[in-house]
Image (spheres, rainbow, N blue to C red):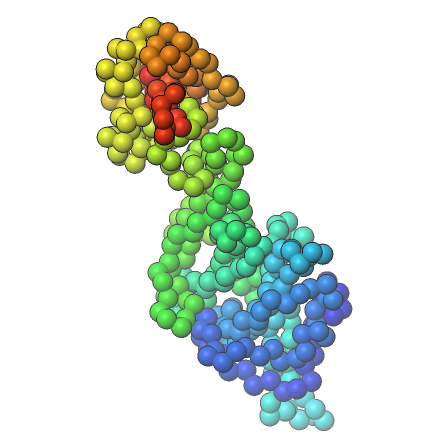
Length: 363
């Protein structure tokens, strides 16, 4: 950190009147000195938020800024400036009636020491959490937006005292979205959540044709700071389950997601009916019906398939598409791997792009 970012002596006397509980002052926050004197030249300040960020009863200043932005697009960093009063300050052997303060910067992200990235791209919102119901801040969570306004980052910090500053508890990032759960909403005009974040769900694009993502769920128990990931990660749709997936692997995933949600009627809609199975007997004779009862709480962890589907001209309509999809799932009954025969029964039908149905699994 440069000398400009070091401990800064504030010549003016500061009267520090904090608002407990991470409440923001009604008037716009004012920084005690000229920002240009304390920040690097390549930082672009976004905003300053004045609040009691460390729970000590006094206010600090959070600066959100953009850096590494040669074309006005770059990540968002954050630093909290803390005006720490020197109670031992003396002048001419006498204690001053109001004490000068040291304005100390505590960087959040970016941080090469923490080994993590940034708070957000388009914006970042700070939330304060009171974990032990004493109306003081115990943890700060920054929810960062990507350029499409989706929450794609979550960074959690805890105050460790004046020597260590703010400890990064965990940084989460997912280009398919990040969701946090835990804590009750604050009253209007405040930012203090009661409780704390207990679950974080991270979605990461697999960049495949069905717009799937890898879903990771992290949890922590009461009294613990560390998060543990549910094993194994599972597959999901990035933007929700489509009514009629255009590709066969999408239909297989949609079937299992409906089962996992307890919606057996919706799950049946992805299977061939008895009448359809009889009509396509030549094609389906090599597979058996899906297992009954279905697996309990299934989660898809792998999908494998050829890029192209096969065609047959033996049925009406004259052409049908079919494909094999290898699926690995975990459930309350263990791990299973199956190969599904999936058939598109809507080939050639007007106003219907695809209607893939699961015919059965190979022995």
